[in-house]
Each structure stands twice: as C-alpha cells, then as structure tokens.
Amino acid sequence: MESVCGIYVKSVCRWYNETSGVKRAYDLGLIDKKWVEDYCRNGGRDCVRKRRYEGEGYVSPDYVLPDGSVSQPVKEYMERKGRL
Image (cartoon, rainbow, N blue to C red; front, side, top):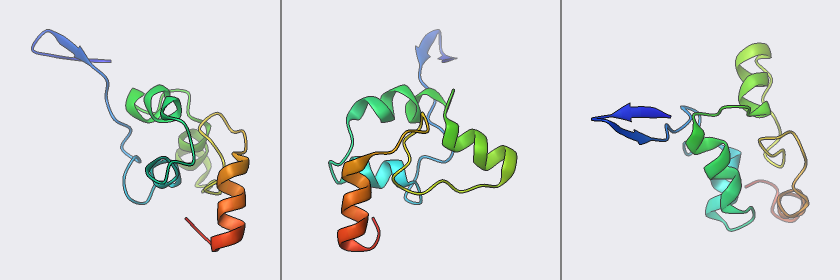
C-alpha cells in the first residue's frame, strides 16, 4: 500500500489495463472480483503472471489467474470465442 496525504491506498499494477487478460475476464464477469482486489489493485504483489512476464518475458495465457492456476470459465470462453 502507498500513503497519499496520510491515507493508505492500494496501488494498481502497471499491467492492469486493456491488454490484461485478467482485466478483460473480470470485465466480462468470468472471474471473481477477489482476483483484481488481491493482486491487480495490490500493485501486482505475489502475482505469478507479473513475475513471469517481468522476469522471463513470458506472457501467460489469458486463462491463467494471478496465482498461476487455470480459470476453467475463461478457458472455456476462449475455446468458444477464440479469444477474450
């Protein structure tokens, strides 16, 4: 958390934008808000997707959640539609 004028606020991960598979999945209602709150709006702390991208240049598939697990609803959506 960051302190802004003495008030603690969560920092948003710099990768949480329109290119983020997690953001698109959340906006479509395919994943629970907890993923965004616990990882994306927490500066990306402990996010496997962020760590692998920044450390290895590896882009995780859109159906991979921030903890590294697979979201079956997102995977099934992608199989039906082609992409998020």
